Image (tube, rainbow, N blue to C red):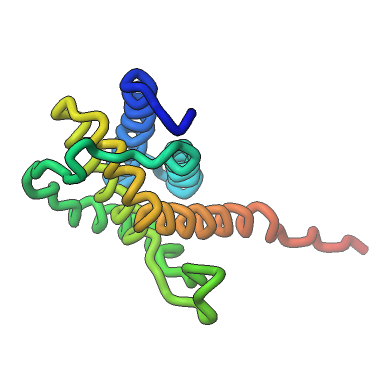
Length: 181
């Protein structure tokens, strides 16, 4: 995209991002309900990867500037505690992990929870989706882009690394077959 995006460019980007956001939210909800079964972690890896693609599109785009330089009020965001609890239950054995949140500034690893990261991402995405649902795609893009750089991009990246490590560990840590005499 150029530095001078047309309304059609912004609308097309907003539609793509909204689709990724809705898929992410639907996927989290299904996993939190237990629909993932033994595929919970791989399904979450897929969902997070896809929403990070939307974040990369936002990051590669020109800065979204609102005409009046303010975000219209949309009311309180939904309470996502039941989603967080459902994910924590499904991820109990891998929920806690450590992360160096900012590899350029942090010097020590910090404890995090996948369930918290996944829902923190969802919370930011829901807020933008509410703007989008009220036919305000530019406000949605502004929020998604701002919160991607400020908050959800870091949480999504950390969650992606933790999910990847869980799957890679399960696939690569295979016991050697016993030698037969």
